[in-house]
Amino acid sequence: MDIFFYIIIFAMGITFGSFYTLAVYRIPKGQDITHTHSYCPNCNHKLGILDLIPVFSYIFLGAKCRYCKQKIRPRYFILETISGLFFVIVAYLMKLSIYNLQITQIIEYAFLVLYFTFIILVAGIDKENRTINKPTLMYGIIISIMYIVYLYIIEKTSIYRYVIYLILFILLLIIDCFNLRKNAKDDYNYSTLIFILVMSIFTGEYVVIATIITTVISLLINNLIITNRKPNSVKVEKNKKISKIAFYLSIFNIICFVLHKIFVDFYSTQLL
Image (cartoon, rainbow, N blue to C red; front, side, top):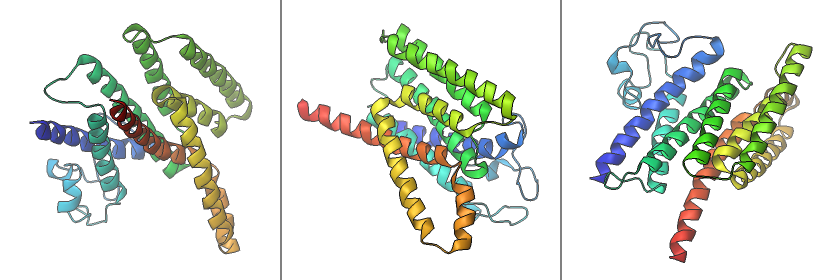
């Protein structure tokens, strides 16, 4: 029976993944992400139901638009598939089962879905536009505060640790507002610090430390590869790599979080 339960979770995951691809494309352009009908970005033709089935439409249409025959970027298929797999993996690691579902498990899982949505939107927008979108960042702060309230009221978690996070949020937002007023543009560094705070609240300090270390190592390796290229390509890549940190942080945070859950689950099983 659980196999059908996880199939439903996978279907939910790829559906969210389809929304992520839409949001990543529209949010930087200031377009509506909830009411405006989906359309082909090349020919602007409104997409039908058969064009919007996550993962399967991409396969059945041969990775091309049904109307203009323009190739569909593989990122749609990749993101939808990764989203579905993440939903299933996290549900499995949380030991969700149709036979013993508990309200606390459902709430925890819902918060992880909200957080995963935040992470993917930040990563996708940063990869495509080299920036951390402010409304998306505010969404992350809001769900962080909601999660802190939940932990304190429902799970009776000590509030002192999270009070520090809230103070840091306020300080960084104040500094960011002053910087925005002074320079008339967003500061990528302050946005990255706020982003890291949100990651810490949802995945914990140890996972975030591992995330930062793997991100730094990855960027160093990437820079070493770039320095061995031709001079012309070096100049182009240097301009592009500066504001892509949030993308790397997002990817490695997801990986480190899943590996941490697997390790904790394995270790606790060995102790039993």
